[in-house]
Amino acid sequence: MVDLILVDEKDNEIGKMEKIKAHENGGKLHRAFSILVFNDERELLIQQRALSKYHWPGIWANTCCSHPMPGEKTLEAAHRRLMEEMGFDTDLKEEFTFIYKANYDNGLTEHELDHVISGKYNENPKVNPEEVNDFKWITIPDLIKDIEQNPQNYAPWFKIIIKKARDKKLI
Image (cartoon, rainbow, N blue to C red; front, side):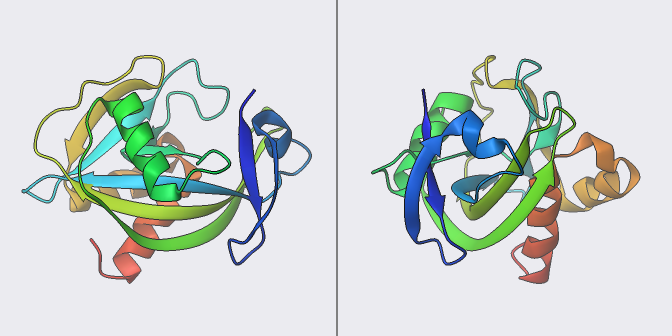
């Protein structure tokens, strides 16, 4: 059983809750992170979520995303999950946070205060097939065009991240 960190709108910890329970009944606000890894050509490494995921399986998303465990700092968790999902680690930097809520068709709800974190890496990952179905490096203009043409292929949080990163001139 994995517990998530419940937070208020200012990212203050207010408790913990088992992962599935935090996603049921409209979702409880919890801490999460999303990693964007770029190469020297400014291409973004994106992943297609494993087909076995309980929500948003087979959907394209950012390089890596997850939740810190109780007692774990967000950047520590980001390094841990990047290695677990993508098979590499790199220097990471927190860029911004935002809150979103998205309902999935199986009745689960994502309600997250998401820490967006960036890094650089120039090799292909060694993905964990239990987490990742596929990956690709993509330019930001090509990504934005594909999100506009095929929004159903992309995770809801990822579409928000791309818009906010553009607004903040990070991409």
